[in-house]
Image (tube, rainbow, N blue to C red; front, top):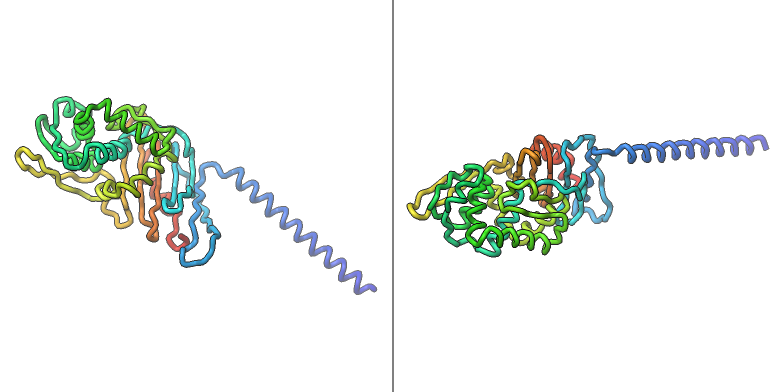
Length: 300
């Protein structure tokens, strides 16, 4: 009888300790969720060779210094990190991605475009364009994307009428269900050109699936364009610091004094396209690099 009582006592002690540990575990997890703040919490899908639908999570204690940010596996159509993803923000020259889509779908890549006085007068000298020069529309696209030429963007828009061009940009945004996006000019010089990380992810997905050539241009370290009147070659060096990196699929920079540094980047991580969007950062490249450290190819 004494032995039985001893056994029962030990059993109840064991159960009590187990419940205490469980309670502590639940409390700690709840506190962790409440204190999440802006700390990076990236979730990576398990290696496709493993037959499982489970998700593996990698915790990162890095703080994202940006107004809004997103990490998304495009093929999975799943956000794995979110920070103010529905917050509207001035996107600056990221607008040129939509402008490029309009050019390809409405003007074509082989139209000759003459640089007029108004285009040259646009803020910025990237591309070093001069009045009356003539370029193929594809070469002006390259100038828009690699050196973020505002002159090239204006020249392309004016070839069909700037008002019509901007209308087509907004029409395409509605078609892609980018409900929180609006454009007031083709270059992004207007602070009123605004979007959200979620909307920009839709734009990036559309480009990746329908106009991959856009990303192919943006990943180049440099390229040459030809002025058609005198057949003179002009070299363009990509301003994007990620250009030339093996894993870099493509992307676009954007900056205004009011917007801070913006950056859309698409990387090949373990043969999967991973999208990183940074809006309103002091240094968008540093923030993107931070986020890359939270994506483990061995877990994906």
